[in-house]
Length: 187
Image (cartoon, rainbow, N blue to C red):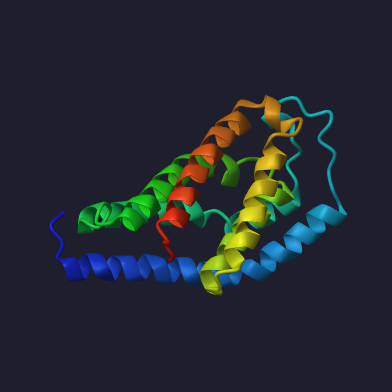
């Protein structure tokens, strides 16, 4: 595609604006869903395969508020490559790597039959970090990521291929998060 730099910038701004609005809308809904899932947990001890998770109404209700993440990252990758900005600096390389890895592995979490509270909390605190740009929020987001990672390493998740792949993706994401931190990058 032969777009001008201004057109690529417009597409980036549009994608970012949709992502920001989507994040603002999703924050209160994700908070309610996390509280509900913590207060009314399902017990996973008997689950041996992903298809054995119950198909619950709350999983269907949260999906519209978490599904856009992989799409945003996919569009962002196209825009960064098309505009020639994917490899312009250490920060752009770090963000690009973060978005590529996320776009590969995030669908395993977002589009799964069951969405545990610790999946939602990661998306929630990512949205809060984007919408309310305070540096201390990075640490809260990191705690949410660590809780999510701990969650997928617990039974029955740790024995399922989908979550084993998410574990690999999460370890790769840690590398990009470290690169972002070392390079002093911010959104």
